[in-house]
Length: 202
Image (tube, rainbow, N blue to C red; front, side, top):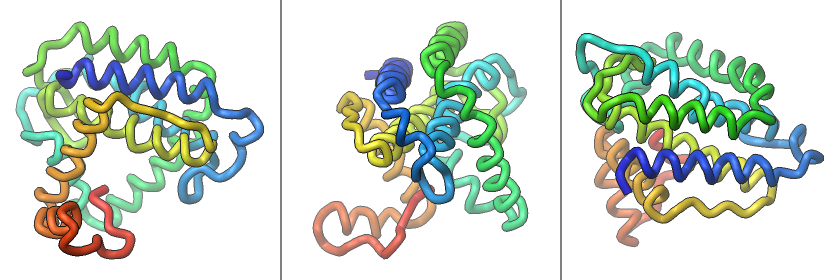
């Protein structure tokens, strides 16, 4: 699968998952301080709602050359900027609970916007100019990772296409390398050691 097909596949799987979440679980635990409803809202917002706006924008320069650079960027920002971004993410999650019943519509808009751009078009993202082919996998990653969080919190099974999981896993590994943690991850994946407690690439 190419990055367009993996995004569309992840979007379809996420929309199906949201439709199977029991209503009586929505106000229960989701992820961290978020309820399940807020977790779904955040995922719909970051993985689907923002896609048409970003793809409809244009940037004069490429500031981030690869998908892993998008996630690695947060390690280089000042602590107060990162704290503000985390707070804004929480606000967005609460705002986006309104998307619970419109995930399918959001997915449709996102895929339509994707069809209107070329792979190498440079768009404006929260971390600066990126090529479409580099930025979109970060949205697929959001759908897969947080989609899995939703499934776990709701106790509902989900199965993303193997190609989608492969893309997300490879991106996580590339982020680890970009952050200088490649040897740690490689050692863990090959059974030589365990990952440090609470280790994360995001």
